[in-house]
Amino acid sequence: MTDIVTPGDVLGNLDEFKAGKGAYVNDKTIYASLTGSFRIVSPLPESPDQRAIVEVTGHKAHGLIPEPCSVVLARVTKVMARMASVDILCVGPKAVREKFAGIIRQQDVRATEIDKVDMHQSFRPSDIVRAMVLSLGDSRAYYLSTAKNELGVVSAESAAGETMVPVSWTEMQCPLSGQTEPRKVAKVG
Image (tube, rainbow, N blue to C red; front, top):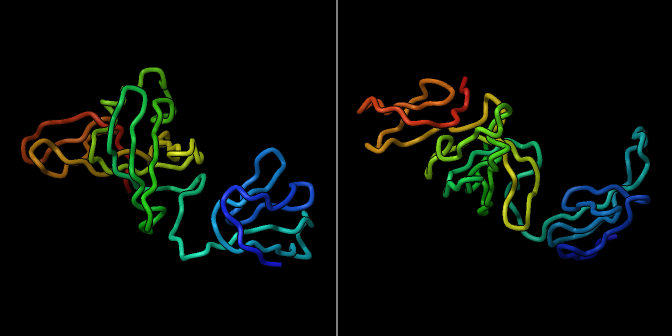
């Protein structure tokens, strides 16, 4: 069974089906998350859950899309008191075809001393950040987190226009001027 569906179309009920690719669940109802062909896939015989899977295959070739728990690289576009806005550039090692917006909220910058986080001491516009996708967030942006040692700023430019090098987990230094700037630095390597 194949039909063309659009985002928000009801595909089935969670009691009868499982949500597959291109589908999401809200209040026990499965909906399409993209435009494309709808199909029902039989479960594997050895699967403990014998519900059929409903999925939507994209109408045109979409590139990678960020999903919860995936690691992304993003460019900081704006830093505010309680959050930083970013544009997602890569999901894992692959570049995205479409532009995806993300938000790193103050409480998602680091795992400890959350109430002491200063967004302007953590990120600056044009920084490249490694982050983990927490959730789809609101309708405009993915919610991202840098609350692990390996997540945070991986590349930043100094006022002199040089690529800065990390000197600690809270500072990066300009190799030209020697001036340090505060950042939430990712542990690399």
